[in-house]
Amino acid sequence: MKLPIHLAVLDFFACILIGLGMAMHFANIDFLPESMRFEKDGLVFIVVGIALMLPAVLYILRGLRKR
Image (cartoon, rainbow, N blue to C red; front, side, top):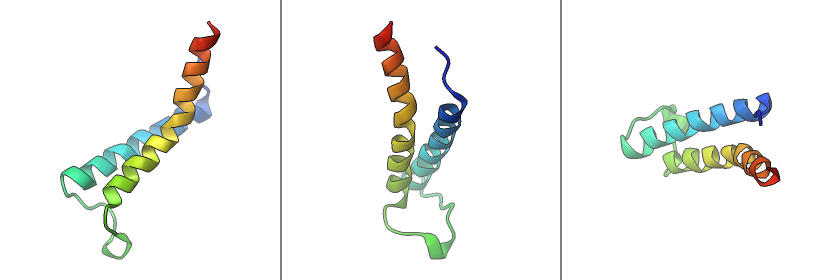
């Protein structure tokens, strides 16, 4: 089973968002300009990253169920 390129790209962006969110939340590193920051922005990045990962995870699980 090969992961389609659009899901791989989406998963790549999800990993980047999760990594940035973890750095923002746990290490207090600010990547956003001052005017774009808001409270709990690191957690929002993490949640959006997880949401972007779901299509690839569901595709893999469906492929495993068909075996």
